[in-house]
Amino acid sequence: MSADLRGFEYVAEPVLRRRQWQLDAVVAEMGRTLECLTQAKTRAAALRDQLVAQAKASSGAVDSRFDPAAHARSLAWLASLQGRIADAERALTQLETQREEVSGRLRALQSQVDAIEAHREDAVRDFAADTASRLASEADRDWLARRAAGTTTKVTS
Image 1 (cartoon, helix red, strand yellow):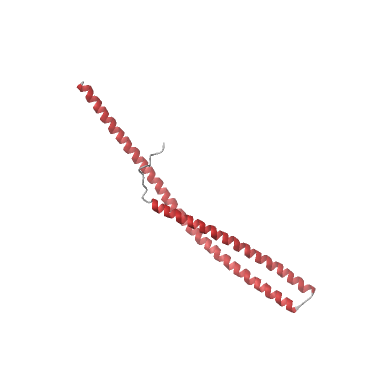
Image 2: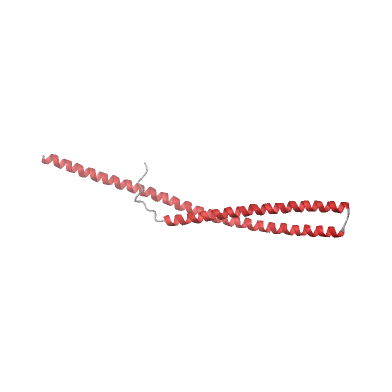
């Protein structure tokens, strides 16, 4: 049997709603951060693959016929590619740091929401127990009043 909660008002309901909204916002932020992190990992992997392919192509060109100008351009391109890889890995590190920070906020907000919801459940249980106790007490008083009224009518009759 569930308790009648029509008279129940939870005073911390606005705080709970605000924390849930904040939690929803941080969950969305975590999703965006993870998407950016995935894209950054993909970019870094593509750059590494490109570096390996370019290095193989450069070494093959050196073996067949040595052209100092082409070799210098190839080395400059490889150095540029390594710089782009380093930039991509720095961005990846920043995104991982951001993910950890967002994850920390997410855990903190989730624990706050869980604590408030647990408190609300306790308040509902207390309200239901108080209501049941009050109703039982009223029923007892009503029964005693009817019993007393019933005995008085028998004596006067």
